[in-house]
Amino acid sequence: MSFSKTIMLRNYDGETFVVDEVVAVEPQTIEHMIEDGCANTSIPLPNITSKILSKVIEHCKKHVETPNSNEKDAKADLKSFDFDFVKADQGTLFDLILAVNYLNIKGLLDLIYQTIADMIKGKTPEEEEEMRRVNAWVFSCFVGVTCLYFKSKKI
Amino acid sequence: MNRLPVEVIGNILSHLRAARDVVIASTTCKKWREACLKHLHMLSFNSDDWPVFRDLTTSRLEILITQTVFQTKGLQGLSILMDGVDEFSASAVIAWLMYTRETLRCLFYNVRTTPNVNILDICARQKLELLVLAHNSINGVDPNYQRFTFLKSLSLSYVSISSLDLNLLLAACPHIQSLGLVSPEIAITDAQVTVELTSQTLKKVYIEAISLDKFTLEADNLVKLHLKDCALELFELIGKGTLKHFKMDDVSILHLDILDPMDDLETIDVNNFTIIWSKFYQIISKSCKLKRLRLWNVVFDDDVDFVDLESIALCFPELNYLALSYELRDELKEGVLHYCLQGSSLMKNVTVLDLGWSVLDEHFSDWVGCLLERCGNLKKITIHGVVSESKTHVECHMLASFTSSIVRLMRQYIHVDVHFVYE
Image (tube, rainbow over all chains, first blue to last red):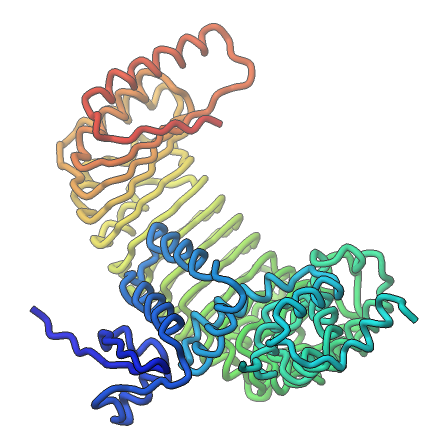
């Protein structure tokens, strides 16, 4: 029976998550904290909510547990997991970006970046403006409204 | 609520890649514009991305690319793949490369330049990790001056280069791992067209559409080798037994010299190749770790020298995928069956079989039966056949009796999943 070390992560809501060390080191930020010896009690992650943290842990777990083989089935399985993982609403995706950026998980970060880029792709400036309006709290600078006036030929 | 930092917006927009999408995105607001100017990593000008590219004149395109590239800062990836363009002017190309070379990590470029631009000169001693070049010439390589310390992957398609320069180029890349050569124009210096490549770090080699008198590849750390559409009189492979995957598609080699123990081979995939089984077998017989063996559309010479299943069963105990497809003349079919029935060693680990013959007759179904007997743990079998467009009465009858015999055969192996692929 192997003894696997676990790490405690305490988040913004005060909740504690216990994770296997092999999963916890997927985020580079945590890996560095463990290396520097700051992980003896629990690792504080004050800027991440429970909802987001559990999603991130779910992703790390899946990728750690899937054997790194070249087998078609394993790769297809991971791909379909990733595809479903990013089917969240835009708000969740943006929360995820901030969390994953802080935690520094390259694979997951690239996946989310690509998902959002695909949403932006092929849209006209008007459609993008619409997208911004819906998520105004993110795209919150509006100096560009001037150029939109020119585009919609309201002059 | 939090705002996304401008660097993060830059990361997202870098995943857009296509220049038109990036430029449109940059017009939505000041923050996105700033992200595109200062934090964009990747930019791609691909004739497939936007139909209007094909309608623009070459000079308009050059202006468009120059204006877009020069507004970025710190670009790490640049891709210019314009199929409709005959040639770009050297001054424009030099400008794009000199502006980005200090931060550029990957470069894709496939347009001829007039006069020829020495891309290696411009990008040497910088950070380039991936270079994909097509339709250009490389004249004169100096490994001392043109050093690519970070280059891991190099791909040259329709590039004109001398055999000496090709080897010098490899020497100029001390950490190269992957090399792809597609239809190179090798300048002939001797009476023979020879290419000799040496690299201690190469792991993956892909060669397509090359015709040489002699090709020597010396790579002590080679893991994957794939040859396609090649005609080689003499092919020499020198290594230290690290090769794991060996694939040949439509290749003709008169003399195959392998000075490599081949101990670690896991995959052998040969398609459309004329082989002398005994010679080939000698080369691969020590690969006891072999997991996948595919000999497809192989033609056997007059010699009664066929793939004998007994040797395959004994030499490759870990085999889990076997694919055999023969082009056989009638007289040789009895011989094949004879070889099949010799010995009875089982192939316990084979779970997937792909079998194909040029004609679907009772000899084929007997042969399928032979193989089914040996593979006790088989899960899936796919039968490949060629069906001619105009079917004579005789052919229809043959196909019908073949189908009946396979149905009878598979009744004994109900746990095996059967598939048919007819071309």
